Image (tube, rainbow, N blue to C red):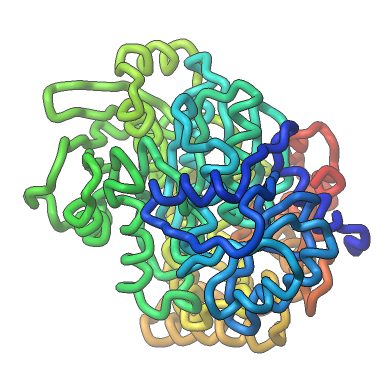
Length: 552
């Protein structure tokens, strides 16, 4: 099945916009930009009214300010004529694109950097600078999605109307908007915030990726609280080094971007993040990973997780504060890393202004930290245990395997995974080695090859697994099976009573991209069907159907 009818760029853009379009003249906009330290030069009619802002010439709506951003291969100014033909009312350009923009006959606002200016422009235009809407951001390599779901669940239990912006979905008080990027572009984000404000939303929880920080997608946004989960190898195809990756993340924790910060300090990167932040800091020690830094003096108020005890699939735990505060909590999601995610969510909500006694009340009255997060340690079957998770780098894979191992310590773990094409290739053999060290049976298959040759990706991962098995004398087994659906069937076929199957890497995703073509593939569906065919009894699909791919 191939997705053949994608929404047009303009239809996709409309989904982000508030029902009531803003109206601001270029003169008014230019005057307001001075408050952000931006002094534009106006060329043309300053009385022109703009009603939106857009980076994509194909998605421009009537009356938009088209932002001509320079790119790696071309300059956005090359598409000014197309934007004008789509109804753009004016153009935001830098000096290198000014003449091409002016050639359309439209008014032009000329700035030093379009990329750095477009966030503040959108904030002014959509009014997202105005007080009254709480904004909570979560960054880190792993755990962003689950933490934002926990935050949203807690706030709902407290009676708030919530917004969610993330990898899986965007929600404005329950109204779903399709999510394409972990973090949309700056104009879309500010339009979303305006839409959420109009819907009566109190607080928005948002994933903030390193890409979004590097590309100024969160430009013009003011976070009440920013949270940090962890930092492990990923996205080095973009950043080039862990130092550059850290630096990108750290910019979220500057005082001018976030008023308060809650930083998990389970490893050296977290402790360094706490020291570098200029926001008002609270630190959180949950499940230390490196055994160091326990006595290190860090800035701000120090909180810690204590008394972790397994309870069913999940864990009970307490959060202890610097002045004797104590909060009892439970999460039903498997894995110690979900204790970390849950604790971070709780502390962020507290730092955002919710009293501990109010949090304790909703924790005692309901179970808000057992919210189902699609494709994140999602249990598909109880016997054999079968779990789907989004783990797509070595650290997340290790944590996921450890998480399922903890439920059935005497059983075998069979892991099915691959690596993504056109991304950081250096992590592939490392992922193979990690799987070989922590699982009993490793089945290497395809993830999203994108435009890369799938067999080469599989070989990179398999090489890492086999080399680790030989060099370290491991007792695990590794095999290459493809396509992915066949690998899942093979894992189910070899699973004995008491074994655990972990299908990792794609999580909630329902399309596999192969050479530019989206092919329907949902790990949850494939795993459920394989289990049924083998005579097992998987849990019902969460939507009550047998094929969640049909529902996206």
